[in-house]
Length: 207
Image (cartoon, rainbow, N blue to C red; front, top):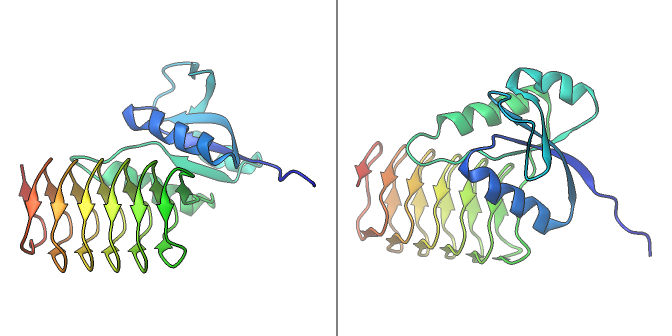
């Protein structure tokens, strides 16, 4: 049996979320992490992985033959850095794969968008739609027929019940529970441990 060759990949950003992204990539056993890229080339390496350039070097890195890239930038108060990076990578031509932990349970009749990362111990039920460039963090439950738009971060241990709709660029804090058939608007920030029983309009911040 011929072994499947791994694809070379780089990670953008070396902040707090980088470690989780690195661990997720390694868990898939599909990629070789060949380098890191940060906005400032302040260190030579992280955990033995070399920093090979800054954002300005990305076009040249792409031309060198590296086609796969993952975003190690988190999203709490502001989704813009992650959105800007995703758009830049796509403009250059990089493939930003969806990464799904082998320790998650993701329905085969759900749809996961490009650049979306599904972390360990996450459950995603049937007919769920998750957009591009999202983070579905460790231990979250996304129930049937829920729709999560682009650039959302569902943080650790959230419970999103059935047929919920979450608008783009929204952050849902750790341990939050959202009632079924509820709608959360675009650009919202929902703090840790909230119980959401009614729909929320766009641009709302619940601390």
